Length: 463
Image (cartoon, rainbow, N blue to C red; front, side, top):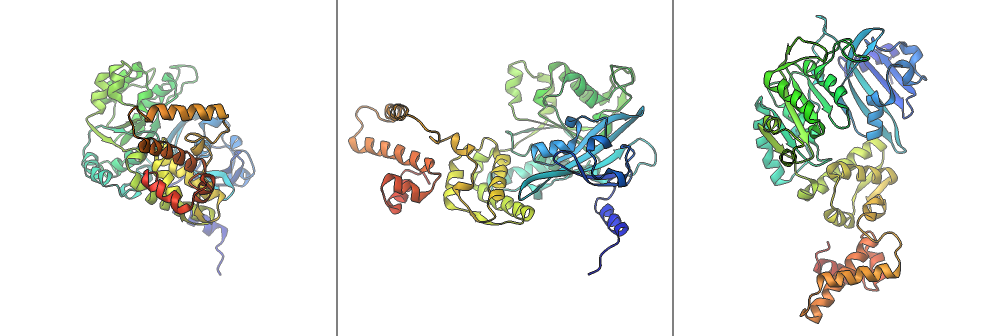
């Protein structure tokens, strides 16, 4: 076996990540495990002195919440194409960061961040990898209605109109935004992503439109996202979080294609396609005077609705298989699939967190199980605490619950046989949930055979 020299390995690593200016890997506390500087003009410590130090020493002007690498660790998901702007020794700097969590069989071990420095000098190279990371191939589905909607999504992508994406939390709104940009005439131009939630108005305004030195305490001359995304696409997630005042400024920028940095009188022309997403009904927010009607219509030129997982339950086996394969590779495990009882439970579960919640459930199961089929015992406890009598209850509480069920389902004049069936269904459904769809334990608890239990479950449509 030929072992490459260190400089050869560094060159190959550099070529793998194309025009990345720096690559940093750290543990969950921020201790640097690997650092490669290709063109990093931001940190004050060189390659050989970086490993073993804290990331806060390399970038002392950042707080923990400023680091994309910690966001990737905390949220357990990649953070892609996030613009960061700051001042180093009086010089304005901006970079585009993508951070990826690193997970093994023990759980979260750290994260890797790829940083691309942006400047306005003539020598700046084309950054083709500032664009989309996802496309139609990354959308995992076989649901007929969802697949049919892709034709609409392709037509929306080809236009230059603003797009409003509706979707509950965890449905994959950012994935759709990337897909739109990847199939648009602007696909070779930058795509910038910004989450609007929980960011103060003054900070969000400077992020969007930029600022001039002295316009407010600590302000520096720096461009905003509109300028950085000029010629490309700007995706604003959770746009419903913006205040009415900032909504007005955003509307003016979109309608005039001009922005004005905070503290400046000069207007700058920009050419940006806007994609926004929300997990709330904007039309309802308009009626409640929480969202501007004119901005709603400006965003809603074209729109796309992402169905929640409960409306595409036929995708659950496909998604489970996909994520099991993903985590098997990541953890070097050999999980072979999901038991039928688990699929039966998944079909009834509400999935409030949608695909993201399913992914997290499979990750948890694959983390604690090295091989074999995923059973009810590998599912996180919270899934049962929400829907079952998992906690200990008193006999009085059980009686009250039973009486309430009787009053709800049994009406005067109902035949004895019908009343018995109603109560039997209630007893069987509670027992199967309480035992996490373990047929043997449920049958033992009810003092019936497994065959009888299966027959009851089928009769009452519980599987």
